[in-house]
Image 1 (cartoon, rainbow, N blue to C red):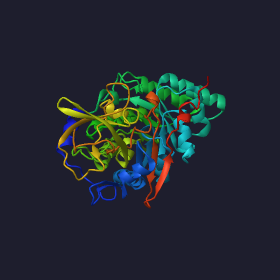
Image 2 (image 1 turned 180 degrees about the horizontal axis):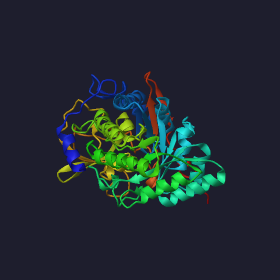
Image 3 (image 1 turned 120 degrees about the vertical axis):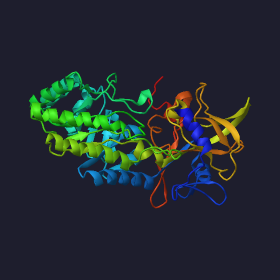
Image 4 (image 1 turned 90 degrees about the vertical axis):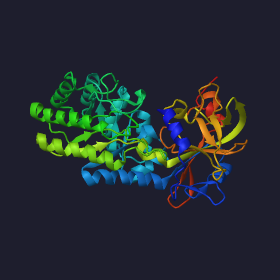
Length: 445
């Protein structure tokens, strides 16, 4: 799939977006009105920059798309896609809840201002400490297994509290994504199996436990799903199961959480479905099944991550050594898999442009390689770019998702500074650049 996207990038012109990505009169990249070259000169490279306006625009569009079809909607931002305090706080300010998968993400969501009761705890192997954190603070816990259900019940009973829970079910449905992104298959590590009766047993046990408040059902089928139709079967199975819960257990759930996974609308893609498309399908099935099973309309929760933050950022890297290798050149950058890990794995494909030569023809073939000591450290392959020189600036576009959460210090690389371009056009540092002292901050001889 990544090779197809590489070819697509080479044959499609860059589509600029007013106020976000633009080309200056001098042929240089502007990000939210700021010259990318000047940002790199002032703050150094590698460097990331986010657009506050784009973050808010994406959230408002997602919320509006679903509210037009179904008014009882709550968006929970998937912090695994980006847990920078500066990003979570912007979305929290717009009304987003937080979807977290660890005590660390819970802590960061709270630090960003999220009410603990507006935190949804996911994950397939929550520790006892994390379960207690959720119970004590009143978060919603998405129970992932029968054994975890017993742990939550035991912890709640010992605390003398009622744990708010949903139960995550596995619907055994697939989607159009890579294997590592598919989470709704029977063989997946996530969720309670619906087909073998485990899910029904879990809800019966939860209903009968005085220390558990059963609020809903949760399902998530994968990530970077470009075609809305893959959600149809999952929503149908979940809502039909809600009908079964009402008939057989007398349970009327107050929320249905269908997870996230809506694809990042990378700038070079034409066929990816929009937020409006996903909203129309998901809510259409829910409304149909509410009537079919005589259900009270539940709150629909969704957990988008990449689709909210993916196309809100750029990553700037400086060109270093250049080598000629057979039919193409290799241009080495000052960041690779330490920062753009998903690109080096072929999971995401980012458009890369020469930010200081945007007006020049791209007529030379390059691999853009990183500085790390392994051969697969290649964030972009076979790209047609202007002739590059040492000191040129490469901008990777649409890098807002799963970059800051996966960046690492392999080979002793220092993590980069991150900027937020505010709605008013100001520049705010939301993460300072690491120092060498940061590499050993928690170590002892």
